[in-house]
Image (cartoon, rainbow, N blue to C red; front, side, top):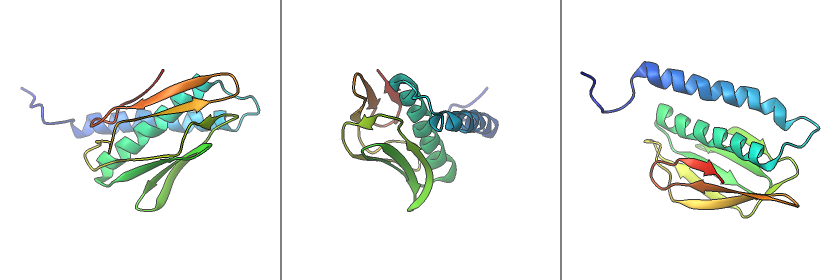
Length: 134
């Protein structure tokens, strides 16, 4: 019988490797000359947010997410882990959130990803830190 205290090491390694592969293969899309649509960029941002959450859990350290006008920075103890720059879009506001050692987010919040025609709402749920685009 399996106890429900958490994930096994194999499950965590498997999940982390999938997120890393998604991150690695999504980076070239940012440097393409064609501008990805907003929903595609929002999905890339969600991958980065999930990476930050996984990093916080696996390393037992606080990880900060800093959204400014046109980029997302992921930092751990002032060390830059990842940076995502938007292509022809911007965020509706500056925002700073963080994941604690258990992967919980500091506060619930919403930020909009906008371009000249459309916008996508990114929502961060309190506690679990789940992020989704709408």
